[in-house]
Image 1: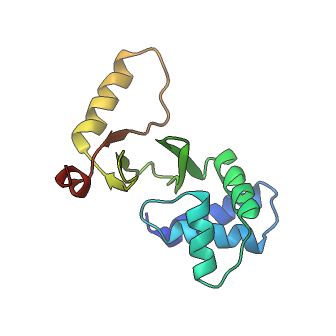
Image 2: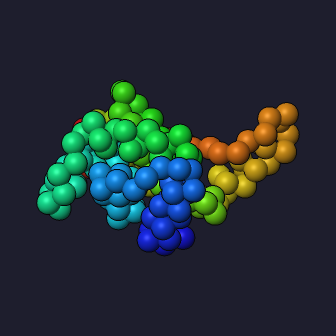
Length: 147
């Protein structure tokens, strides 16, 4: 799904849920739609500021909280209290994360074999799995090479 499709879907869901359009929320949606791997609230606020759209950090957090409540974004804990927010695509398309424990760099990855393994597991457990995220922690190539 294209980023613009996610943004349009998000605006439709917000409207149908009775949430009036607001400039700060629209800016957060646009910033999320324009990134391949989401970001923290601070990163999104900084990105908006760099684009000349001043949105306070508290407004960014409020927008993210609402988007998470409506299941339009996924909150991803990347360790040590760091949280990132990513668009939740209606078609279920998603990726997982590699997090460097030395420098904090986050990279996205996809693995069809991992997805098949998760589906097999879902068939074996008595639990209705409707979402998942995988975060692998270690060292990025640059930090590993520095040792």
